[in-house]
Length: 300
Image 1 (cartoon, rainbow, N blue to C red):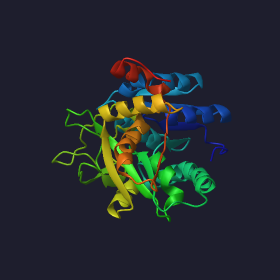
Image 2 (image 1 turned 120 degrees about the vertical axis):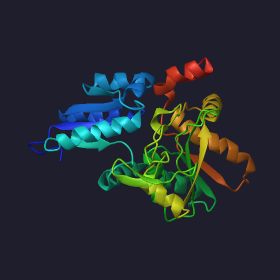
Image 3 (image 1 turned 135 degrees about the horizontal axis):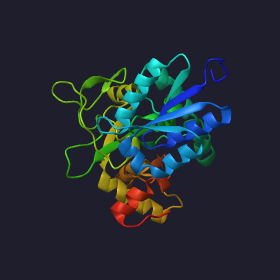
């Protein structure tokens, strides 16, 4: 598709900015025009990735409607793509939206588990029976990739949504909080909504998890009980970031910090034969301004 004579533009939608950053690099490599639709609020709180996107020559389109976050950026990008689909392709950096985009994203991110399953077998000689794979879940792309190759094993999947501020009724955790099925961005899914079925507001310290819906793929995993879902608050994520950055040679972004928060709660209750693997699917550099504001310092 990249080589088609009439295909010369890529449109993308990032929340945390990672997808947009990678897309802008691909566009630069192949000499394609690239627009990144991003909520105005996320542009401010994801400044390092925004700067990288612009350095790669891509145009960032601020979305100022609604909550000015990921959900509105997806809506605006879809509107633009539908009007220009003869010469453009839409690249969705998560397993959300119409079926084909979910498949494309899930297939791409499955490389995570293709590599992980080899590492697990090398480390333990086999896939342990009591293996827990913990991943943050917003749109659900990294979790889908992290779990994909383990679907036919005994590994337990634990997805951690964004519970939002501790003293707020707002969150971004439709699976954890009993949200009903609704339609969002062309797909039926559990989605935060009001009594009239209108999409509800969300709140999370993490831009990449701040989404009112959830991938239909994760809805299926929940309904079939193949995966278990829970949530972590903003405060728990920050506490986990601080602990992991202090004790380990990594500095996770606020997205996987939610997953680490669940691992920290779960680990003391497990036996020595049970194994936890957390997908640290992002670096804290993009969140450094938020972390400094909330904690007063930034651990790199």
